[in-house]
Image (cartoon, rainbow, N blue to C red; front, side, top):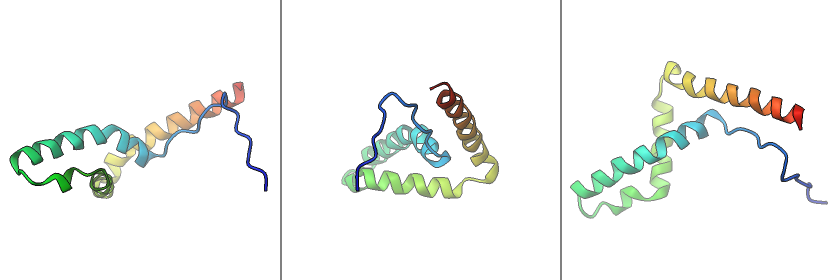
Length: 89
């Protein structure tokens, strides 16, 4: 089977709502974890990247539909822009 040829100049698809949430919240969570580490020495395990990803997933699941709507609307807006860029391309 031949690998699919990808045009490097083609517009990129937008990330889904969860990934947008992660991008916006990751730095904030890292800062919270650093503060936790300073207050509780020996908690390096809590700062690990895998734990940050798990924590972001837990936060996403705990969001209400109203809170998620902001990220979903942003995703829909990016999809519309992607469609415009793709049609222009």
